[in-house]
Image 1 (cartoon, rainbow, N blue to C red):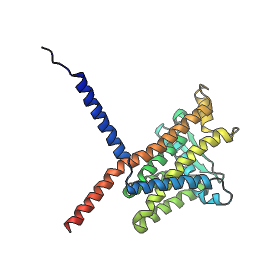
Image 2: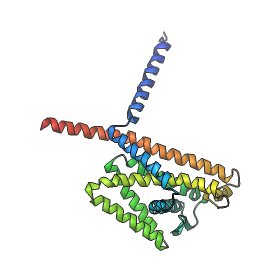
Image 3: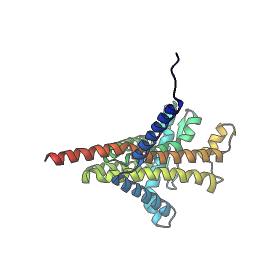
Image 4: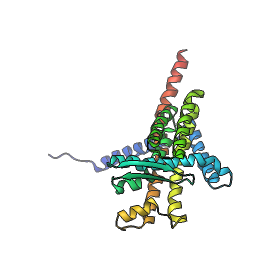
Amino acid sequence: MAPVIDDQSSYTHYLVARQAVQDETINRLTPTDDQKITLIIIGVYVAAVLILWNMPVIKIVLAPFKLLTVGLHEFSHAIVGCFTCAKIESIEIDPDEGGVTRMRGGIPMCTLPAGYLGSSLIGAILVMCGFDVLASKVASIFLGVCLLFTLWWARNWLTRGIGVLFIGLIVLLWLVARSVGLKYFVLFVGVMSCMYCLWDILDDLVFRKAYESDASKFAKQCGGCMSSRVWGVLWFFISLIFFVAGILIGLAAFKEAEMLTDEFLEQNLKSV
């Protein structure tokens, strides 16, 4: 005799399981008190970048960080070029906050979008790690390695200067005040990289129509199947998704570690 399947009971179990998953997701994404502070700091960073971006004289404060994000943009072109068997000849950053990566070979379909998407991905990783001091230390090592590669490929003094400046700053922050400042530095560079990428896409495709962007070159490589603006809009939303994902993953990934640390401290206090 065939078993009787209770459809209503199965559906009830499904609803209960789905609700449990939803509750767990909400719980993981609900920030702790420390994470709320980090989110506020991210908001302050975003507001500061937007306000200072083009403000006369004061915008000079952001200039070194803009050049750093240009370096990350060019590094992303170069590292993807390496992965596609290109020979990297040089990376150059200019004082007008532009940059160029010269390479021979490689696959343009991969290397052209790598500048925007790669630098925004690096920024998202830094934002994610900015929720935890230990993760920030790891992220600073990763950032330092990126800068060392950029130094290796650098062919002008401004590019070398930016690399040396920020590698030195990372080392200094490691040594001062138990590396607490490193967390806020990593977080700021992550926010800056994401914001610069989003702004640069709009700048290339909307405000500087005569300027040949990575998107316009990519559109030509694709045979004109879509315009450069369409590609730019697509990259814009991908970069935005990276930024938001970095925040959400940071909330979920480091919440459990923070709770375990709190439990460990409580147990030690009780045993004293």
